[in-house]
Length: 228
Image 1 (cartoon, helix red, strand yellow):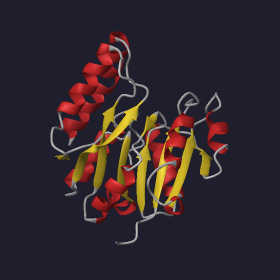
Image 2 (cartoon, one colour):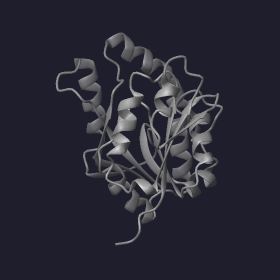
Image 3 (cartoon, rainbow, N blue to C red):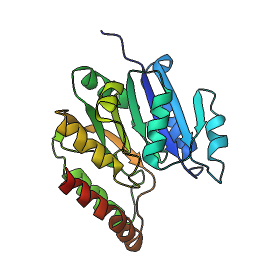
Image 4 (spheres, rainbow, N blue to C red):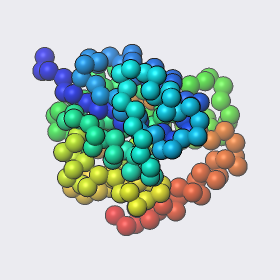
C-alpha cells in the first residue's frame, strides 16, 4: 500500500465558538495518521471564544489573519508544509473516512474531491430538509464529475492551488465557485463523492433566512457562471 500523503486541513473562522469545538473534535477521530495531518485554524478577529477554543487543542496551529474567507483560506494553506490541502468550514463535521476516500483519488490525478452536504438531526425544519434534498439530488451518482465546487469540505493539492492562483481575495462570497471554474478551465477534474457526506451545522432554518442567503449568494454565483 503506498504511503499516505501529508495533508493540511485549513479551517477559516470568525465568531465560530458555537461550532468550532465539535469541528476540531471530529478531526481528532479521522481515520488518517495523525502525524500526516496539519490542522490550521485561521481566526479573523473573532469577538467570542473562537481563538481560545482553537488554542485549547494542542495539535492545532491557531493563526490570526484579517480579511474575507478566501484570504483566510489562502493564508492558512500558505503557512502549511503539506503537499495536499483540505478546506473545511468551522461549522462542518466530516465523516471519519473523509481523507481515506479523498486522498487516493487526488493521488490518481483528480484535482478536487468535494463532499455532499448533510444535516445532523432527523427532524430538521422543512426548509432545511428540502434544501439538502435538492442539493443531494443534483449528484445521484456515487461519484459525479462537476464544473465547480462548494468549499465547505474539499481536498485538493498545493500544486493545483498555485497553478490557478489560489482563492480570489477580491470576492466577498462565492469565491469557491470562482475557484472551481478556474480549475475546470485549466483542465482539472473535479469530483463530488457521495460517500463523503459532511454534516453542516448552520443551514438556513427559516424561509426568511433561506431567502436572505440566496439573495446574497445568488448574484455572485450568476456573475461567476457567466464570467467563466
